[in-house]
Image (cartoon, helix red, strand yellow):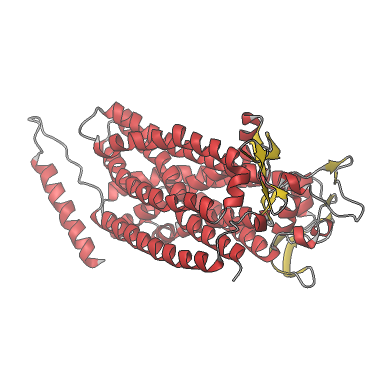
Length: 505
């Protein structure tokens, strides 16, 4: 067993599970702010009911996300000690900022958000909702900054790692580390802004589709109808805007990748030979023949994507040594499925928006059923986006900068291929802990797998329980301040419907 492959597999499995929850909380937080803000502006109590219900779901997702994320930080010290030595100064500052500016802001106001409904004023509670939503967004900022630095390093220099004032030497080679020289250049490295915007958009899509899914389910079951209508309206607004924005953001993201990681974009499109590039819509890369089987493509589309010119050459994989090329098949598949899903989100949200404008959405059961199951699409797309970014970076865990010559071509060596300054980057194979054995990593994969299966079961059980229970009935006090007879009857009816719906389910 290869310890490098096992260590990568373990980190991939743990982060793939964890990454279900941060986008959910970011996306849900924005919709919650909208719903509670509408309650403060209009005074309509149904918005308060909606905000209370989604707050409980948000808190569940937040708790599971925190529990599942702890494991990843331990892996930096156990499986990736060489990597931690190299990036410790950079990652340490980013993760410290994430803890100070994001996690404490988010978790500090979370108690007020969850338990403060009847204990603090509506305005203060709305402020708490905004702070929790802002904290989840801030958390993503620093994580994306740290990851983007690995993709396009900036604001640092490479120096020997010192021990007792002397360079540390292992196996006759000095141990090097990245040291920050310009914090803001590190934060705003060439890919941070584009990647951060794309991550936010993906989170907004997932959170909105999640809320639309549950709301559509209630409408199909004729339960909590008014609550479901208001929730679906707010979520559809954000889902439509975010789906359209993802197309624009993805365009700029592709250009950034080309100028800083040209091998990654070439792998995304299986563009083996430098020249005018086609934009593949469907196909299966064949690495043996360096062709795409069953290829359906837009002629010159890749050239237009990166150059605004259908005939201008695009750097291909032939400019890179085989050892410096990313895995093509996995990169191509994850990238294209993600894009295909993104275009599907545009179609679904625009169709739903059109039917809503024509006042037919809530009666179109076929589309409501689509919305119930469509939440799987953004979940898969977010995972595949992360997979494409990380697999496409290989074989580098910290990608060295590439140099462009005059005339818009890559600077290449005498052999006609790109040669990297390896001291400015770090290969994945050199990043693992030398003292960790493959059998130990394999055993920990099994152990963590069981823990994560348990967390998944707990999350699904509690989520199903909360959905079956539904929102609390709307209570409108009478003139004496007590619950009126009509409201009481409605509350009892809603509880009866909830129990009946649970039995039917």
